[in-house]
Image 1: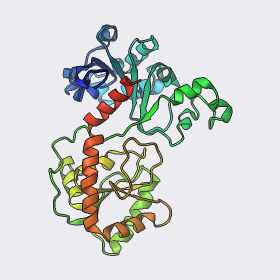
Image 2: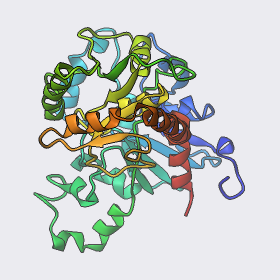
Image 3: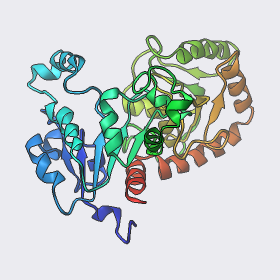
Image 4: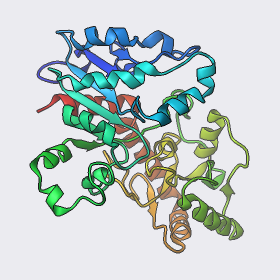
Length: 348
């Protein structure tokens, strides 16, 4: 409850994409309409934005941080070069609507930043100044680093950090998790299944993080030692991916372009234990080491050491998996993440 009101009773406008609307169905979503998808049924065009923002019953604005500003040439090249553009789709509403927040709003504004980048773009600083809370998935352990090479030429100095305006900006940041894929509901097993593998991994290696490239070599070493390592060579359908993850004691979940990833939360929902390299970001309701996950050091044979130690107590891994399942269900589903954002943004 917020000041005696339930979350369900709040009037919310979402800008950029229908994400909150999947949970809070009465949300008005100002976003571009993608032809041939459910976007058509749940978003409103830019011409509706002003009336939505001026609604006297409005309680909260939730805006998705733009990937690029609408006057950046890279945005135009990316949009024109896409297959969707050929089909007549141009996401102008999603890109232009956030600019309306340059006008002072009477209700709190929450920014949702799910990008891989551990910094802010200079073009988005006006949103930081306008918002009450900025929820960032890849929030550096030292929050000041979000300003590197954007509002500061390099690492923010002590002089920069002592400026009151900058300190007030820092206080707005909150970590958030990516959670499981939004397309995953109904695909996870409802209870643990028999384990047929020690460790499972399916994901991109080449062109991704060095953590993955180096870790794969250690997995090959473990396989040569006799451990059952399940690494499919082909891309798996989503349902099969989850069931093969469920059949393994451990699911390797190394960072990709960002540290946080879907696999961190999907593995527990499959009743398996995620095996993750040590975190490099701030986390909301974190998966705790040896309580909800197994963490390993990337240096040396850290991955091998962690796997060998974990698999010595397979029964205990079942306990960790069950606790992780409960933790993710309570804190990292889409509904839980949306409620966290709303509560943090609506409280004093």
